[in-house]
Image 1: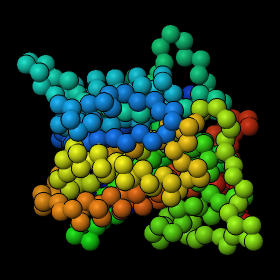
Image 2: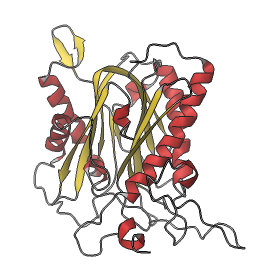
Image 3: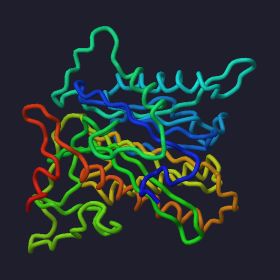
Image 4: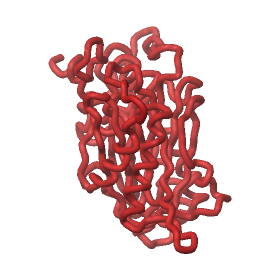
Length: 330
């Protein structure tokens, strides 16, 4: 196990980084069309082709999911990913035509100090194409792909991933680009809100701090503008239907509440996609679905913490410090 979402058989992940841009794209590419759905709990989302993921809609499988920086400009990344997949002969067949099905979501990283003077054409189409071309089983965490320009209330955000297995052996994985309104860490200290779910020392092994007499630390957010969003994919190899993927996405949203304070705010755009590659053919019971959902929420919380833990500060004046900048020497 790599402790990555690619531990789920049947999918690969690729990044494309625009270093001068201080933004990037991450693509989750499925080896074969996968059942998928979505839950959008934040108040300021930026998404493409998510309506077709509702259980009553016609298309039963998707070819990829794209997570992108760039706010609404980043929605072009899905088009670039579609082009790369079309060149491979992928897509929903309609007569002689094929249309790759590539929903996605974006986060706001336009004010992070990168060079956004791109002229007539934003670069996200090219980044989306490159992310698909780069897709493999191993990929970098932290300041890469959709997490390259991400921030939280007090620290650099980033791209995180984690995986786990249920008692019956279904694999569950998560990937998150963490650009949150709030904090992934507790108060002014190094401890992560997701600490109760940590495995090994994947994000420092510090546990939770003891709260003082006043209880939880003061509430802190990035600001009062919609410059935030944590966008995520959870996946499993269990043979779920679209309706079951919808429930999985809803339950997995709880992972953001386990890892971020606050989550699902009016100024966040929190989006969780859920997908099933169905490469473990054993029928899923109601108990299996419940455990897969609970594990997906915990795995997503771990992915969020790993994204912040692994991030590196952008090399620009006034950049948000990374976790390691602030706490590694403590």
